[in-house]
Amino acid sequence: MQDITLHLHDEAGTMALGAALSRALAPGLTIYLHGDLGAGKTALTRALLHAAGYAGHVKSPTYTLVEPYTVNINQKPVEVMHFDLYRMGCAEEFLEAGFREHFNETNICIVEWPEKAEKVLPIPDINVILSVSGDGRDVKLCGVSEKGHQCLARLKFAPNL
Image (tube, rainbow, N blue to C red; front, side, top):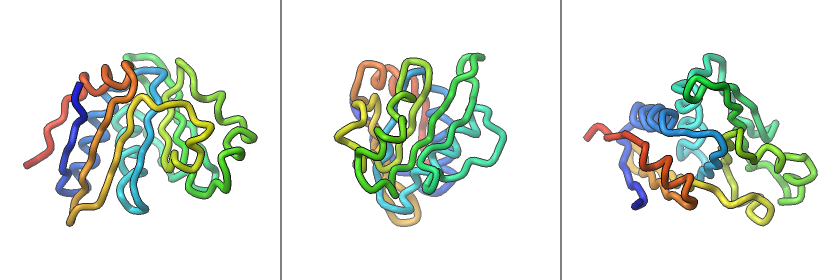
């Protein structure tokens, strides 16, 4: 499976990609979101969660470091753990908080700013690299594991050109 490179022209494109990703998810996936502040990491996650059926407010876990959400994947409840490690001082804080236990075969973990704890984080299944490009965003989705490649193979998305 090749990496997927996209240009999203606007916020609607980011929301559409999040919705498409939600339809390709499977329990046990770990997704890392890379990008500068304002690149769209939280917006993508918010769109993914809403498209997966979460009806409540999706806030950035900048201060709490993690927010749990329950969604349905193939008519089964799945916990999505949304991490934002931007304010973490060191990788050991991740371990001390007990976050590693959330990375398992039943949860889906989405991690913003994974570089803050890369020494202690498990290897992701998918890396998503976002960057601002004009009024839109450039996005690269890279499968790292077999599970990640399978997820990207299920992804059905054509950005508005």
